[in-house]
Length: 225
Ligand SMILES: *[C@@H]1O[C@H](CO)[C@@H](O)[C@H](O)[C@H]1NC(C)=O
Ligand SMILES: *[C@@H]1O[C@H](CO)[C@@H](O)[C@H](O)[C@H]1NC(C)=O
Image (cartoon, rainbow, N blue to C red; front, side):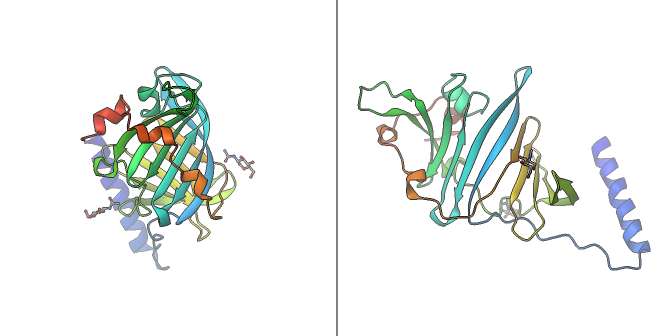
């Protein structure tokens, strides 16, 4: 109730401001659309039990081939990686290809013999909501305002929902991701950006994934099949 009524007050205050201003009213920028291809390293903080956990990673995104990969140096606090394989200090990747999401643990042996490669499991599919991020995933988001993030002029967007997401991107027409805050506890700050083509090896599915072993934990909860 409190949140709703304070939001109404803000809306009223803004309406009053813009109606009293004779200058052209502010026009919100168009909703974000992710660049079709990019690579962006990030640092991430997540609440993990009573600690704040930090890791680094890289996001590889290619909408033209519907492929995405998110590497984390330590996946223990990620709710998919950390519940599928509760190993602390272990690299974990989400790899989404052909509408299927896999979890890869390249520092862990698959346990199927010397040649079997590293640990990999099938997490969930696009029908379960586990597909590649939509370029327009924020098409219904609200523009919060312009802010400066680490010296860069940014657009701040907010998606209300079951889980509130705040997103910042550059305001230079390139729509580079700057920060994604998934409330209550996952804060991802992007440290760089490249829109150069991504080599196919990045999205190559290791042969150990073809085993079809299924991940437990959060993956099993969201997976219908
Ligand atoms: C935005 O809202 C429309 C209408 O409810 C819906 O069809 C569309 O899927 C939504 N977009 C996203 C990215 O959720
Ligand atoms: C802030 O900007 C500096 C210089 O561009 C960069 O080295 C640093 O990684 C950035 N920090 C964050 C948290 O984005």
